[in-house]
Amino acid sequence: MSEVASRLGRLGMAFSEEQQFVAKAARDFAYGNLRPGARERDRTGKFPLEAISELGRMGLLAMKVKGEDGGAETDNVGYVLAMESIAEVCASTAVILASSNLAAKILSDHGSPAQREKWLRPYAQGTLGPASFALSEPGCGSDAAALTTSARLDGNEWVLNGEKMWITSGAHAGMHIVFARSDGPGPEGISAFIVPGGTRGLGIGKEEDKMGQRASGTVGLSFDECRVPADHLIGKRAGGYAIALSALGPGRIGIAGLSIGIAESALAAGTSYAKERRAFGSALADFQNTQFVLADSRTELDAAWLLMLRAARLLDEKDKAASETSMAKLFATEACGRIVDRMVQIHGGYGYSREFDVERNYRDARVTRIYEGTNEIQRIVIARNLLRESS
Ligand SMILES: Cc1cc2nc3c(=O)[nH]c(=O)nc-3n(C[C@H](O)[C@H](O)[C@H](O)COP(=O)(O)OP(=O)(O)OC[C@H]3O[C@@H](n4cnc5c(N)ncnc54)[C@H](O)[C@@H]3O)c2cc1C
Image 1 (cartoon, protein in one colour):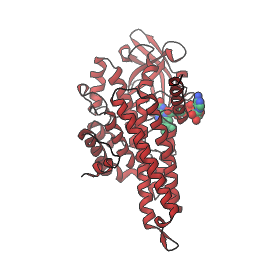
Image 2: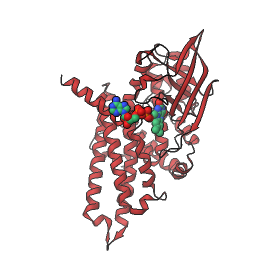
Image 3: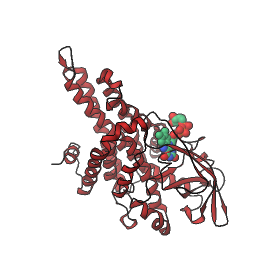
Image 4: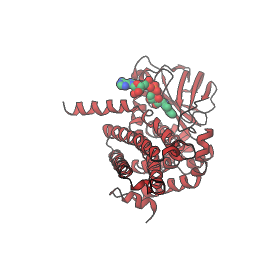
């Protein structure tokens, strides 16, 4: 039995051959190609462009895109298994995959046949590099409907002006999916556009010097009379906010997978350190305190897996799974935060050193509770649905 099959077997569920195949391909790539440079990338913040290009050629930047558009047509379960595998080794690469797949899913679901042919197909075949999802701005993140980047129609061109912030892969993306205000205030005034990388008037801001996930290329984007052809509008005019939400909901399970990957990595390191390290004549693993910490962590991590797989399966059955995707993201990211903290503690002083990967896991974990909808926003979604269902 392969390592992937035995790990998945522990969850007591059946996985298709395709799902196991994508998990194994991602895992082999992560351990073979990403692991050697992961610590160095964290130190330098260097974007893993070569690895991302290779992942693009493997179809991992467009996993959920239909085969007819050149995509891998991976289901949601396969997607989260791949995210988990990559994040175990390099959370920066995993979040680049998450935002690229988010952008690709938007074009796949809402792009016209001509847009899918011109942009999605080459992208899915790995020739455009990563893609960015550009929604957040300096003045608004959670309240995305307040965005102020503007889009005006001038003849047969859209002209964009404004600023985006925190855009993953922003400096390296071959295409950006940009949300801008075309039609007045509120969520009903927002449209979505394809902005090719390198378009005149598109500026790339400074790279954020971040606490964790340091190699994910997070930058600001500026639009100064940035013109794109009228047919770069995605879906209906003023339908952009609904498009963003339709992608962000299902995208949350990817962040659950990413968090589970980080936590799996930390738990494996903590477990083996506890067996090796001795204090007061015993291995740390002999202390009941250590055992309880490991037991709590394994239990929470398995619960996170099960919530994530439930949400992924519901999505695969065409259920919107709005609460379930939020619960998966909320629980997995918070469990991950608790687990990385405990594993740093098991490592004692060494856990505070950059020589040990748990220190990176600890920093990489923190942002998962912030991006793709903060955990407060997830709680709002869950409560809203709960209250609606019970009325
Ligand atoms: C590393 C990184 C990568 C990112 N990548 C991208 C990307 O690729 N594309 C993109 O568009 N964005 C990206 N983001 C932005 C991210 O999605 C936002 O940071 C996030 O949505 C939160 O928005 P904010 O930072 O403006 O915080 P705010 O919205 O200002 O929130 C601040 C705090 O207030 C809380 N809060 C806000 N509203 C409420 C409410 N109604 N009830 C209760 N609490 C509330 C929040 O939960 C949070 O704790 C990224 C961010 C980071 C840090």
